Image 1 (cartoon, rainbow, N blue to C red):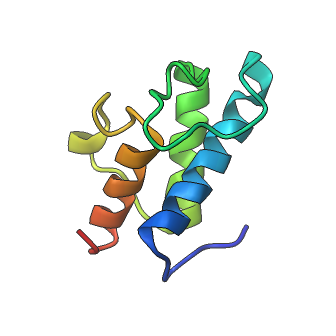
Image 2: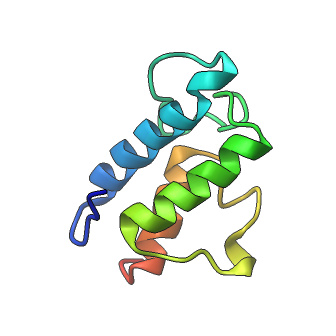
Image 3: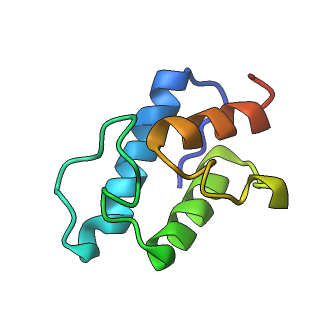
Length: 92
């Protein structure tokens, strides 16, 4: 797996959107990644897919979500996940 150490917010959002699409592919979700502000629940992300997304994002970006970030607000949309990743990487 490729880990990104230096990337823009747009690159983080593209990667997160693609990960959401991948983790919702088995949930009869749309084949295309969600836009930045679509609620992930509406994009087809259920609780099991969310666990997979969290694991993927942590590994891909070499971050660990602290308990305080494991919330609906953090995982509301691609944009909120990307903002959390940026914060964890010291870019916020």
